[in-house]
Length: 171
Image 1 (cartoon, one colour):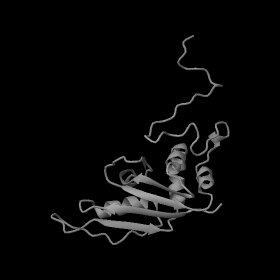
Image 2 (cartoon, one colour):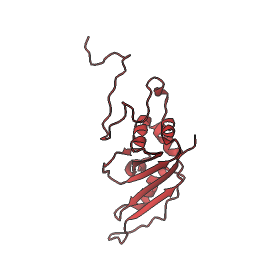
Image 3 (cartoon, rainbow, N blue to C red):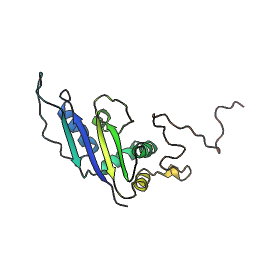
Image 4 (tube, helix red, strand yellow):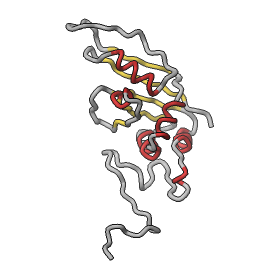
């Protein structure tokens, strides 16, 4: 299955440290070459900027979500806004600066800004499910928007394995 077309965008405000944003970007997407970073001192004359990167390689991002063991969260977050083989999701720049992936949920404000990732491609839902697959899904299958999906507010959907004893029961 072909990797989808990926675009990464971020808005740089005058008060953001462009070098820090650049470092965070490269931590998640090391094949990108950030734009020229301008170092300014207070008071700044810089205006808001939009950085856009096209045809982004997702290999490091996918490796990171696997290493962090957040594949089910990635499935839910990447598929939450899926429509007609297109999706968009946000990643925390602050987490990225520490080499971590943290999904920012709809309408959530986050310290340090976000990277907006847009994916598009044929059969994108199947690609997301395949890209986030892990061995645990053999026993507990998951799919996009299933009954175990994270709620839009970010709350988890609790579920219990019926084959395991109830740990809250007292004997």
